[in-house]
Length: 257
Length: 324
Ligand SMILES: Nc1ncnc2c1ncn2[C@@H]1O[C@H](COP(=O)(O)OP(=O)(O)OP(=O)(O)O)[C@@H](O)[C@H]1O
Ligand SMILES: [Mg+2]
Image 1: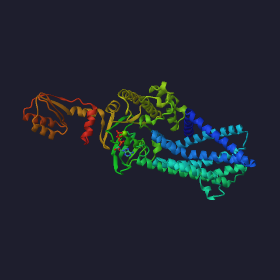
Image 2: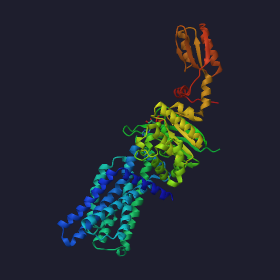
Image 3: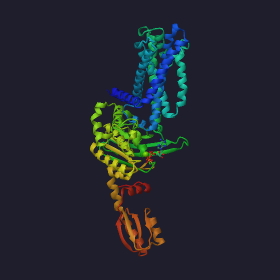
Image 4: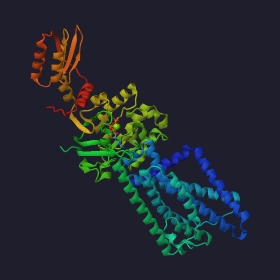
């Protein structure tokens, strides 16, 4: 129950902020819409018409994964730095729930809201272009969730580091490109990448969307890797985050001083 | 009765980021707080008040020593100990400025695992008690400084924790608003029956609200006593002598050697000496020195001290003062 209340409070805060900063939110939604439109149209003109749908799907999946991945990786670090600057971080640290739970709840809320926005926009784009993609949501959702969990782990690592070093924005910028690169690399080209967070998930979703693989056809082994990956990175991320918290509490780094 | 907060031999040093030199912010501090008590943590700038409070809150880990809250060691079981405390550390900076008054209250309750329904009644009560009801839909960044401060305190009251820590609750407020917040604190603290620790360098706040005060200076506890005892101590021992003439240099030197905390205001018609007399013999010695030159004593009286003067004396005196 405490977990649900925590999640609900953070979901509400994220929602209030989306509503309160309506111009921002509208700009974000518009950007998404135009990128989707661009992706749909671009493929139509350039590509081979017979593979147009597969290509469109490929690009959209990559784009959505890249966007969500980046958001998940950056959000916790960004929120923590921001709250430290404003003076609310110590208040969060006074909660008996622990900051990692609050941050996980906040991130989960923002992922849920963003997925909702993206899904709606995708359908709107399909309606405007009259081009209906065949999206197997039932198969994609579990893959997406597991991928996001492993990305959260990376997000916690970065957040931990940012508590101590404060300035990680330059590092995050590089990460953005690394991540963009990773979405386009197939596991077949570089098999060791399955042990990275993120890559296996994108690969599986690609299979689902382009080759029409469905949930029941994905092997236990593939899901096993994805699942193991999610648990491993999430736990590792959390351990690093909590270690960094401890260091910060020893050195007095939670407040701006 | 076992105290609700027990601070034992706590030390904390900071390393300065650039120069690498160490600052001993808290130096072997021990004190305890009983349930229901309102304790004032008093000290000049840089004395270590904030550091002490943050260690009690579990935001800073002591280098050595232990802090127990309701018998729970707060470095070993941080989250469990936190169930018993809440705090206002940086006043209005502890709030979300882009949320409304009510949203702030509800969000912080949610972060402690409570639902909006669970806290509904308490939120109403607090909005009423803190006179924030008609501002409940206002964004925090539109509130006055005093209102923000009140809201921050209300947020800390919402948690229903046994202990509330307030670091400098009137800092940065103008005289009038400071007074208002003080009055509010006074009534709320009594009404809500919490254990409270207030840090401040504002003597009026401490004298007004607290039962007992721990005075720290340069990281060390210099005094730990009931405020009325401290007042009485200095009230009884501080005297002012009105003289019908000047002291000679020799007299002055003797007096200054004997009474370190003496102030002499020379005037040809009406000089005064202010002096602390801790033992009875001291007063005879003083008269002996005056008698040397037959200096006329027009009158003498006990000095009525305020808490500020007591505080200054304790802090500047340096050495530990034992009472009782
Ligand atoms: N995070 C920090 N890093 C380094 N030094 C610090 C830090 N926090 C406090 N100090 C130093 O430790 C000493 C005690 O500071 P502290 O903030 O506890 O005092 P205070 O009694 O709260 O003072 P004030 O009345 O100014 O708030 C000071 O010398 C201060 O410069
Ligand atoms: Mg302070």
